[in-house]
Amino acid sequence: MKLLLNLIWISVFNKKTEISFVIIYLCFLAGKENKKMKQWKHQRKVISSGITNNYKLKIIGENLQIDPTSVSKEVKRNRIETSIGLKNTCKRTQRWPYVCTGCNKRYNNCPFTKYRYDASSAQQKANYNLINSRRGIDIDSDEFKQLDTIIKKGVEDSKSIYQIKVENNETIKKSISTLYGYINKGYLTTKRIDLPYAVTYKKRKHNKKYEYSENNKIDRTDHTYLDYLAYIYQHPEIYVWQLDFLGAIRSDNNNILTFLLPILQFSLLNIIKNTNSEKVVNFFDSLEDKIGIDAFKKLIPVILTDRDPNFSDINGICFSKKTKEERCKLFFCDPYVSNQKPNVENMNKQLRLFFPKGKSIDKYSNNDIVIINKIILNKPLRSLDGNTPKDAFIKVFDEDLFNKLF
Image 1 (spheres, rainbow, N blue to C red):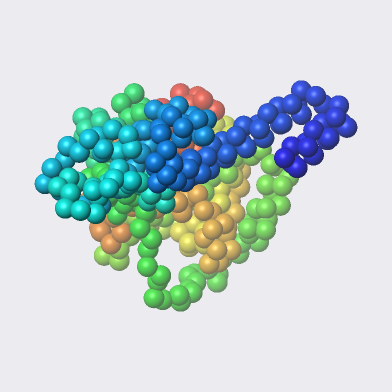
Image 2: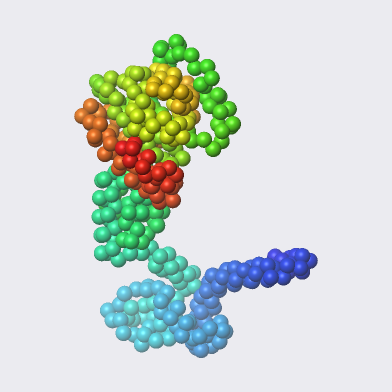
């Protein structure tokens, strides 16, 4: 009431009548709802006292200012069974007061099942029924089986829950959070451990820092991460690509080059045999051959990568072999700071769905990599409002440039 009076005073003082009346009305509704929640707790005490004093149903209803039928239903619904008898047709428990309270025979050898109504026990039973009525899944069995099958198949195909939802939006009527809730609670055949990265990794036993010995001979002046920040500050609307290798086991000859445009989540993958700086340069030369030098300069103005020696040929990457003109800028992250290029690190994490860590990638061909690349580009993403990276790329650039890249 004090809060209500303060709101009225403020509204009158500021003369914002429409807004103030809305606030006052909302406060009134909130207070009314809170009062309603506490009301039955008090009413059960009155009902219990009325039964003990042998009041008529009509009198109790008048005292509580509610319909006597509501009182009758309350007692019958929340009465407690105290003992089981041989018979269950006692007239006293089949009509008002529905309990044995006040019966002269309740302590004798009564053959009937006995009941009592206690305010505290009735409140506990009512609370239990209220909670229990809201448990379970709001879905029928046929719909649940269909949902379970769709989720299981999608996860087995290395799809995210978001992608499964988008692709089956007409069939799956539940939200993303609800689907994750079903999985976390164990309702579905798909378990939390089946989801990629849902289970956290163990802390690594070794935290030994290392540096490539070849890096000691590489001059990265004007190509450091600080230089990158300064360049981006001067050109805030420029596209920045991130470059990295996925990583392979020691016995492998092949490695996968990951080239990502983070703002569109658009990735280009390439498999390189016996990696070295010359073959990395060949990758960029092949891109220029596909789309032309002018399109290259517009599409790939800036590249950010780590200090892998395979990326050490700065001039080879930045300058066209044909025209000798500068086609892009190249910058390097600081040593041991992989979170300076987090997007490509996350993309490598996603690629582990197709190339599990510790498994050989030598069996994959360039054609296999292109197929996997297209699968990734056709996945709808929440960060793109349900669109795919392919759709986003075509929207920003054009379909002709996309077709040239593939």
